[in-house]
Image (cartoon, rainbow, N blue to C red; front, side):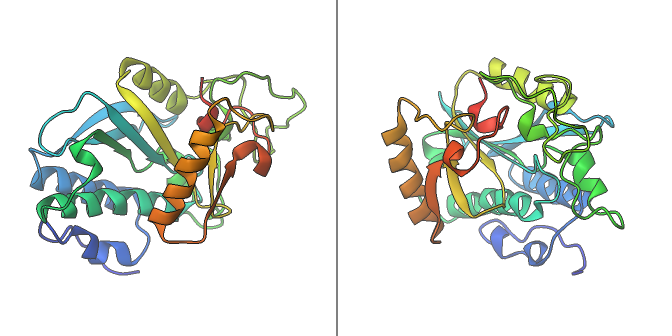
Length: 253
């Protein structure tokens, strides 16, 4: 592992050696808190939830200098083992800060941008322990990406040992409950992205059924644009056509 290093100077954050390898949760929060310290007029943090083990989940709000009437929300690591999802989310934040410093156009000119690098902090920490690298669920062994309010009910036959165990009911977990309440209070959030690392696809609603959402064409266009911006051969499709999943964040009601 590379030694832990903090951010570079403003305008060069994404070139930091911090991004040369995966980092523990403590290192991640130390890094992003340093970004807040170095950019007090652009970046702030606020508590949005807690974990089963009592750890605080923070959102980092990037305003671009002045607060906007609408916001976008980016979260990662609902699934603990998908380490690169968190790295990618944090790299995006660092890149936008660089662009602002270098007088480049960014989405922060139009929206407030909220970044949550790690939702499932307990699970992420577990995934760093010996023999637990593939930890997916939270400390209660609940799949947080099956624990959101949904139109349909989960099958009662899903075993707690199953990797997609949804918990005792929607929002049974402190992580999802806190974030759901926070999102409701922040009604100016007009869009969100949940970053995962599995399958290399851009997925959009519906995910709980194979039926198309009413605005399917808009999501298709958005998915294509995201794929082009990412510079990879990603394919956009409805989450349901990839695999029906009830209670996932992309279908949060």
